[in-house]
Length: 294
Image 1 (cartoon, rainbow, N blue to C red):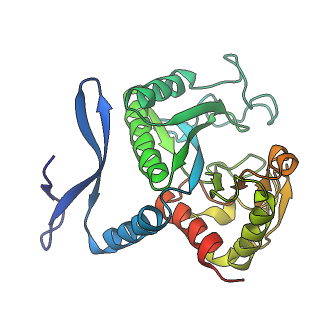
Image 2: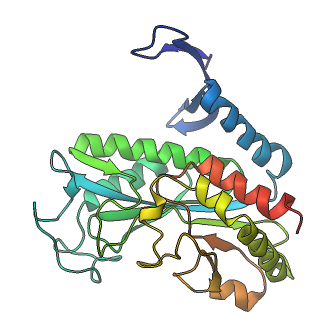
């Protein structure tokens, strides 16, 4: 696919930009370019820098698993799918990973998205209903290096198209409904080659210590409106506090019990918001854990 020229509506100066394809996927027998980046100074430089970090330096040793939460909203009223208009459903509890027309709202959309991602060759690894009714999650990965960001962006686009067909609004707002309801995040699971080998747990703990040293910098880059989500409630750590723990959903960084038991594995950064830029988040985690000197 040759780079194409596009024009941005409403612009009269510097309105044509080059689209450069970065990644490809297979749809049946045809090979389709599915990720292009508009080479605008404001976005292009950051995008290329993060690709350089993940591809050129660490592409063979990094593994990511991205958990994308999102909320389905009723069109025109912008109220979660399955909720009575102007009212509220029963309290949280029975909706997480639930089945049934009174607890799972929008499964036809979720299943269609999963199948479409499989067909497009995206490494989608799961779906589940979330704690707040009308909220769902899909997972991409484990993926190698930069491909995690590529695949998440395209999976988001496919979901946007499917919700459009269904007449439902897709929201990546990290706290779409204020009050006693869970927000939406993009938990990022991460490991290096040394973390996955014997003795890796000690390397994981050192990496987490480095993340704590740059907590404010990471929070600033982890998505807009995240302060409404990271309150210390609803399975989050307070935005002003950095802490980690084993099997702790209220921590900034969570380590799985299997990783602790086996002495190697991966950890989960629970701070990123659902609207985060996966290139920024994944490259920043790599830079902090690998390049930062204690």
